[in-house]
Length: 137
Image 1 (tube, rainbow, N blue to C red):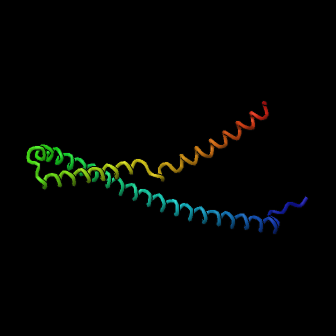
Image 2 (image 1 turned 90 degrees about the vertical axis):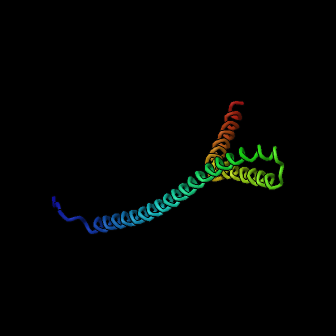
Image 3 (image 1 turned 135 degrees about the horizontal axis):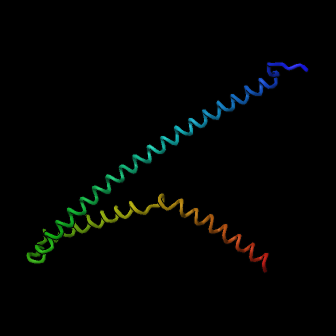
């Protein structure tokens, strides 16, 4: 029996092609990782920005409610046009702030994934149910 310590030329080429495919896969995974990191950083910045907006809106809402509590008794006593306009402006701004705060809780992006999961698996459940009913009936 003749044992050769060197691999056959075919095996060397196979090993080389395996190494190049591993290299290509690692390059692809590195670019995917870099892209994923960039996406995460972008999402984090958006979350930080939204968080600071929410803090601002909550602070402004508290200020406006305080001012509203001050203006309401004066409007009832004096009933001047200037106080009524200020009251209207405060109420309008409060409504806008409440709308902005509510929109931070519910948005299409936050419910998009669960919605499509329900559609996908609910539809799959209905199809499986029909198949089982037709087999049993």
